[in-house]
Length: 179
Image (cartoon, rainbow, N blue to C red):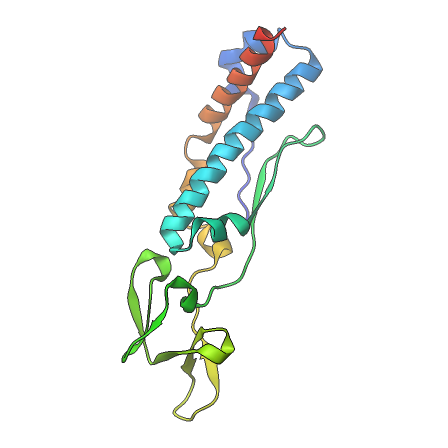
């Protein structure tokens, strides 16, 4: 699933008088820097929301999100989440009498009948039948799935246009002041 935001030129009407003072290259530069400034702030907010949402450490969430920043050739900012569902053992999984106790999605819960196999990298498993085998892994959240859910997705979309106009205005002021 992909979210795309396109801006209408009328959003920049309040700063039209400043836009006229810049050359084409300066204007492109201001928009590129404004998009990257807003994108970086939104990326940080999304990572913080995902840490709360998934229960994963910040470094794990940060590593699973790739960023493509606006460049001179493309005025777009994109976040790409990668990774699969994560075994519950990575969420502080501990073997108990009832099963495995872990904290995926930021809340502690017990997965009844699950067990941790130390010889298989300490991952959590559950039997598929009454016999010894087959067994299957017990999974928690996946970053690509969670990034498209609330509240993480709201961090990207809420007030985006207004904030972007403010950041472009900031970059234009910087260019005009440094002349």
